[in-house]
Length: 86
Image 1 (cartoon, one colour):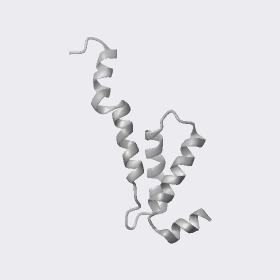
Image 2 (tube, one colour):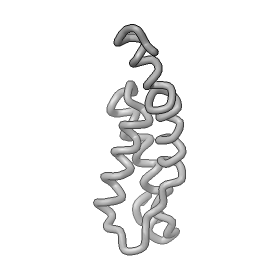
Image 3 (cartoon, helix red, strand yellow):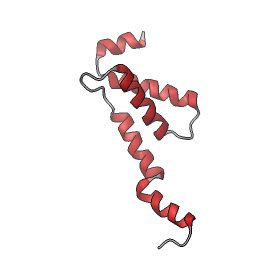
Image 4 (tube, one colour):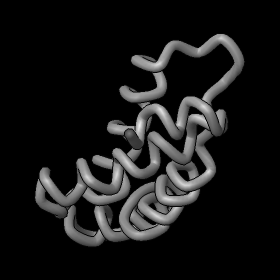
């Protein structure tokens, strides 16, 4: 049984937070694909959410760059990807 708040926080971070959680979000971000019928705005919002959770300490500009690449990868429609990149 943890004897202090610091010890309790450490115990709880093992399965519920910290690096383990960041790794989970990183995998979700990398694997995220646009769902059938999903609006681009919904995809964009979810990608940005996952980027913030994956890279909480990264600067906004760098994180947005990564999120942009992940968004384009998530489109899974070559014609739309080409249009977005142009």
